[in-house]
Length: 285
Image 1 (tube, rainbow, N blue to C red):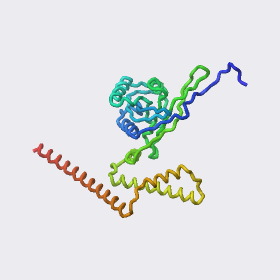
Image 2: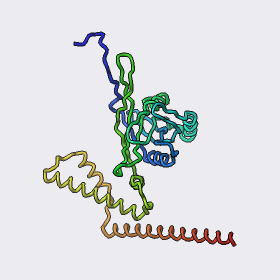
Image 3: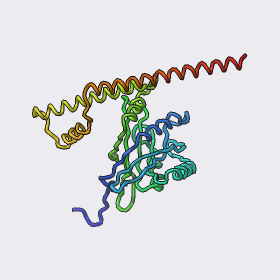
Image 4: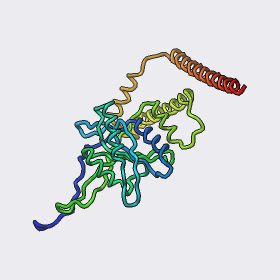
């Protein structure tokens, strides 16, 4: 049995309900900042803006980069720039407050504790978001952490980063953009037809997974889940009742509209290129 005056090493974990939800525009902004970083910088860091719901969910809606210099022993942030940017964002949207900070790279680095200490003064229990801009195996490693105190008796020894659940939800157009972003070597951006083809392939794969699940439940190979069954039923009931002939007509009309847009955009680019060359030739003459 431990004595009454024994010193105990203890962790003070964060609430179990603490989680984060991130909007896709934040990822696009972080990747854009990483591409535009100075040549000598290995990573970029910045501030996360958003809101905190009563249930403890942190919704990350916006971000901006903060200039910094770091070495093996110290990290220097441009605090004046950070405060000026935050004041500018507050004028546009006062509901978005500081909820944490982000950094590029795989996981937590050595100087993260120093930066987290600064943001702990800017927000209560800030979230640390890491984004692997290398996209290893064309997958984005996006993780969120909070700080956990490690204390020995009444004396705080260190901090430990604890990963929390992170929810990333996006519409189909945003998902297509993220898929392009994952491909580090891109010849050109996909047009509307290529985006539609990619969406249809993903939809076909999802329908095939639903078929396999339903067949497995009917044949007794898969344990039924009432929540999944209700979700499938709600999805089927939300689909409009339309005949195959009418669906083919609507689908073909949409394809014709996309083809017309592609043709008009190509024609416009050609006219602009010709006009630019004629203007250059007129100036030379």
